[in-house]
Image (cartoon, rainbow, N blue to C red):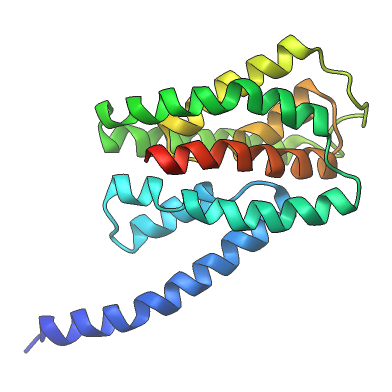
Length: 201
């Protein structure tokens, strides 16, 4: 006869191990690609039967230590473009707050679908890229970076995401950074977006 109580205890015992493994995956993907915090953790949490809103918002605090450690590493390698980070965060941070407050009025199923859709589109676009941009530095005008920050910030707040998976392709396509510069800069910029998003959510 099936013992539901025994099965629940078994799943509860495995939950900490699964969480540690998920943390390792998130940290590795964030450091390597500049993305992967919420975009990786949210579907994994849903597989663990975590409620939709919790699966969306819970990975946000995880972005903070991974972005700090990864950001420092990339900064020491001179891969982070400080001007891009500053201008992106200038409009991105308040936009995150607006998006975060709006997310409570959007059904969780729609938010999950939007998150999955963005991840698929961005992933397919990145696969088509070879070496990224041409490595031109500081070439993007200020208004464009402010617009990137506002749009990405609003979407990351709405989807309870750190925003790295949106910032990296934007830096590649619009700012013409190379892959490593885009990954490093998006990782640090996502830190400034994750803080207000974490607080609100």
